[in-house]
Image 1 (cartoon, rainbow, N blue to C red):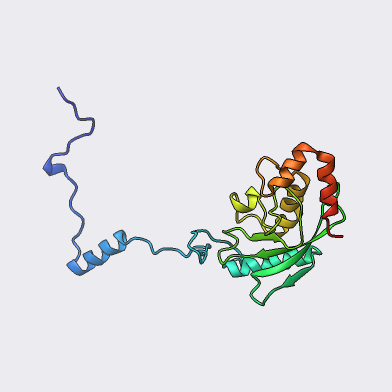
Image 2 (tube, helix red, strand yellow; image 1 turned 45 degrees about the horizontal axis):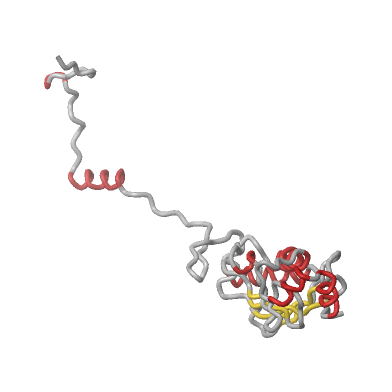
Length: 203
Protein backbone atom coordinates (compact mmCIF):
# COMPACT_ATOMS: atom_id res chain seq x y z
CA UNK A 1 0.00 0.00 0.00
CA UNK A 2 1.41 3.40 -1.06
CA UNK A 3 1.51 5.98 1.72
CA UNK A 4 1.90 9.62 0.76
CA UNK A 5 4.41 11.27 3.07
CA UNK A 6 2.51 14.57 2.97
CA UNK A 7 -0.95 15.22 4.44
CA UNK A 8 -3.71 15.47 1.87
CA UNK A 9 -6.15 18.29 2.44
CA UNK A 10 -9.76 17.80 1.57
CA UNK A 11 -11.34 20.51 -0.58
CA UNK A 12 -13.08 21.90 2.45
CA UNK A 13 -9.76 22.34 4.26
CA UNK A 14 -7.85 23.93 1.39
CA UNK A 15 -6.76 27.50 2.11
CA UNK A 16 -8.85 30.17 0.46
CA UNK A 17 -7.45 31.58 -2.81
CA UNK A 18 -5.67 34.92 -2.56
CA UNK A 19 -7.67 38.01 -3.29
CA UNK A 20 -8.03 38.36 -7.02
CA UNK A 21 -6.25 41.14 -8.84
CA UNK A 22 -7.53 43.03 -11.79
CA UNK A 23 -6.26 41.60 -15.05
CA UNK A 24 -4.07 44.68 -15.65
CA UNK A 25 -2.60 44.55 -12.15
CA UNK A 26 -2.14 40.80 -12.42
CA UNK A 27 -0.20 41.16 -15.65
CA UNK A 28 1.95 43.87 -14.12
CA UNK A 29 2.54 41.72 -11.05
CA UNK A 30 3.48 38.71 -13.15
CA UNK A 31 5.74 40.86 -15.28
CA UNK A 32 7.42 42.21 -12.17
CA UNK A 33 8.07 38.75 -10.78
CA UNK A 34 9.17 36.95 -13.91
CA UNK A 35 10.98 39.68 -15.80
CA UNK A 36 14.65 38.63 -16.19
CA UNK A 37 17.22 40.95 -14.62
CA UNK A 38 18.84 43.51 -16.88
CA UNK A 39 22.40 42.61 -17.91
CA UNK A 40 25.09 44.32 -15.94
CA UNK A 41 27.97 46.08 -17.62
CA UNK A 42 31.14 44.02 -17.79
CA UNK A 43 34.54 45.33 -16.63
CA UNK A 44 36.08 43.61 -19.65
CA UNK A 45 36.32 44.98 -23.17
CA UNK A 46 36.78 42.65 -26.11
CA UNK A 47 39.94 43.04 -28.11
CA UNK A 48 39.60 44.32 -31.65
CA UNK A 49 40.82 41.07 -33.13
CA UNK A 50 37.88 39.19 -31.59
CA UNK A 51 40.06 37.14 -29.30
CA UNK A 52 37.35 37.36 -26.65
CA UNK A 53 39.68 38.57 -23.98
CA UNK A 54 39.77 41.85 -22.17
CA UNK A 55 41.63 43.92 -19.67
CA UNK A 56 40.95 46.08 -16.69
CA UNK A 57 41.83 49.50 -15.46
CA UNK A 58 42.63 51.60 -18.51
CA UNK A 59 43.72 48.69 -20.67
CA UNK A 60 40.60 48.92 -22.80
CA UNK A 61 42.22 48.28 -26.20
CA UNK A 62 45.31 46.82 -27.86
CA UNK A 63 46.43 50.33 -28.82
CA UNK A 64 46.49 51.37 -25.15
CA UNK A 65 48.46 48.26 -24.27
CA UNK A 66 50.98 48.92 -27.06
CA UNK A 67 51.50 52.46 -25.79
CA UNK A 68 51.97 51.34 -22.19
CA UNK A 69 54.38 48.50 -23.05
CA UNK A 70 56.47 50.75 -25.29
CA UNK A 71 56.73 53.40 -22.56
CA UNK A 72 57.71 50.70 -20.06
CA UNK A 73 60.46 49.51 -22.41
CA UNK A 74 61.82 53.06 -22.81
CA UNK A 75 61.79 53.57 -19.05
CA UNK A 76 63.90 50.41 -18.69
CA UNK A 77 66.83 52.25 -20.34
CA UNK A 78 66.50 50.69 -23.78
CA UNK A 79 67.28 52.88 -26.75
CA UNK A 80 64.17 52.82 -28.94
CA UNK A 81 63.89 54.38 -32.39
CA UNK A 82 60.41 54.66 -33.88
CA UNK A 83 59.86 53.95 -37.59
CA UNK A 84 56.66 55.99 -37.68
CA UNK A 85 54.11 57.51 -35.32
CA UNK A 86 51.94 54.39 -35.12
CA UNK A 87 53.90 52.74 -32.27
CA UNK A 88 53.78 49.44 -34.13
CA UNK A 89 57.24 49.33 -35.70
CA UNK A 90 60.50 50.37 -34.07
CA UNK A 91 64.13 49.42 -33.45
CA UNK A 92 65.68 48.55 -30.10
CA UNK A 93 69.39 48.40 -29.21
CA UNK A 94 69.94 45.06 -27.49
CA UNK A 95 73.10 44.30 -25.50
CA UNK A 96 74.42 40.74 -25.35
CA UNK A 97 73.76 39.18 -21.93
CA UNK A 98 76.51 38.90 -19.35
CA UNK A 99 78.31 35.55 -19.06
CA UNK A 100 77.46 34.67 -22.65
CA UNK A 101 79.50 34.54 -25.86
CA UNK A 102 77.64 37.70 -26.88
CA UNK A 103 78.62 39.78 -23.85
CA UNK A 104 79.80 43.24 -24.89
CA UNK A 105 78.05 43.11 -28.26
CA UNK A 106 75.20 45.38 -29.30
CA UNK A 107 72.54 44.35 -31.81
CA UNK A 108 69.84 46.38 -33.46
CA UNK A 109 66.54 44.51 -33.19
CA UNK A 110 63.51 45.29 -35.32
CA UNK A 111 60.17 44.92 -33.53
CA UNK A 112 56.78 44.94 -35.20
CA UNK A 113 53.62 44.77 -33.10
CA UNK A 114 50.56 43.27 -34.82
CA UNK A 115 47.16 44.93 -34.55
CA UNK A 116 46.07 42.25 -32.08
CA UNK A 117 49.04 42.71 -29.71
CA UNK A 118 49.23 41.62 -26.88
CA UNK A 119 47.00 38.71 -27.92
CA UNK A 120 49.41 37.99 -30.77
CA UNK A 121 53.16 37.97 -30.34
CA UNK A 122 55.49 40.68 -31.67
CA UNK A 123 57.66 40.03 -34.70
CA UNK A 124 61.35 40.08 -33.69
CA UNK A 125 64.40 40.17 -35.98
CA UNK A 126 68.08 41.06 -35.68
CA UNK A 127 69.20 43.73 -38.16
CA UNK A 128 72.97 43.34 -37.88
CA UNK A 129 74.51 39.89 -38.25
CA UNK A 130 73.89 37.42 -35.44
CA UNK A 131 75.68 34.05 -35.57
CA UNK A 132 73.49 31.69 -33.57
CA UNK A 133 71.88 28.28 -34.26
CA UNK A 134 68.37 29.66 -33.64
CA UNK A 135 68.68 32.90 -35.59
CA UNK A 136 68.39 32.98 -39.37
CA UNK A 137 71.65 34.47 -40.61
CA UNK A 138 70.07 36.12 -43.65
CA UNK A 139 66.77 37.49 -42.33
CA UNK A 140 67.62 37.80 -38.62
CA UNK A 141 64.36 36.07 -37.66
CA UNK A 142 64.31 34.25 -34.34
CA UNK A 143 63.28 30.67 -33.55
CA UNK A 144 61.89 30.95 -30.04
CA UNK A 145 58.81 29.06 -28.84
CA UNK A 146 57.67 31.72 -26.39
CA UNK A 147 57.47 34.25 -29.23
CA UNK A 148 56.35 32.01 -32.08
CA UNK A 149 54.01 29.52 -30.37
CA UNK A 150 53.42 29.92 -26.64
CA UNK A 151 53.04 33.69 -26.42
CA UNK A 152 50.62 34.98 -23.76
CA UNK A 153 49.02 38.43 -23.26
CA UNK A 154 50.65 38.33 -19.82
CA UNK A 155 54.03 38.91 -21.49
CA UNK A 156 55.27 42.33 -22.56
CA UNK A 157 58.18 43.92 -24.43
CA UNK A 158 60.38 44.11 -21.35
CA UNK A 159 60.04 40.31 -21.01
CA UNK A 160 61.25 39.94 -24.60
CA UNK A 161 64.43 41.97 -24.07
CA UNK A 162 65.21 41.10 -20.45
CA UNK A 163 64.24 37.42 -20.38
CA UNK A 164 63.45 35.74 -23.71
CA UNK A 165 66.27 37.03 -25.94
CA UNK A 166 68.95 36.72 -23.21
CA UNK A 167 67.89 33.11 -22.59
CA UNK A 168 68.06 32.42 -26.31
CA UNK A 169 71.67 33.66 -26.45
CA UNK A 170 72.67 31.95 -23.23
CA UNK A 171 71.17 28.57 -24.11
CA UNK A 172 71.23 27.91 -27.88
CA UNK A 173 69.36 24.85 -29.10
CA UNK A 174 71.25 23.24 -32.01
CA UNK A 175 68.64 20.47 -32.34
CA UNK A 176 66.07 22.94 -33.73
CA UNK A 177 68.16 25.30 -35.86
CA UNK A 178 67.44 28.16 -38.22
CA UNK A 179 71.16 28.36 -38.98
CA UNK A 180 72.18 24.80 -39.78
CA UNK A 181 75.85 25.71 -40.21
CA UNK A 182 76.07 27.28 -36.76
CA UNK A 183 74.24 24.33 -35.18
CA UNK A 184 76.55 21.80 -36.84
CA UNK A 185 79.68 23.74 -35.90
CA UNK A 186 78.50 24.11 -32.30
CA UNK A 187 78.01 20.33 -31.95
CA UNK A 188 81.15 19.38 -33.89
CA UNK A 189 83.74 21.91 -32.74
CA UNK A 190 82.70 24.09 -29.81
CA UNK A 191 85.91 26.21 -29.66
CA UNK A 192 85.63 27.05 -33.39
CA UNK A 193 81.96 27.91 -32.90
CA UNK A 194 82.76 30.25 -30.02
CA UNK A 195 85.44 32.02 -32.06
CA UNK A 196 83.04 32.56 -34.93
CA UNK A 197 80.36 33.93 -32.61
CA UNK A 198 82.80 36.47 -31.18
CA UNK A 199 84.04 37.34 -34.65
CA UNK A 200 80.50 38.22 -35.72
CA UNK A 201 79.62 40.24 -32.61
CA UNK A 202 78.90 43.92 -33.19
CA UNK A 203 80.80 46.03 -30.65
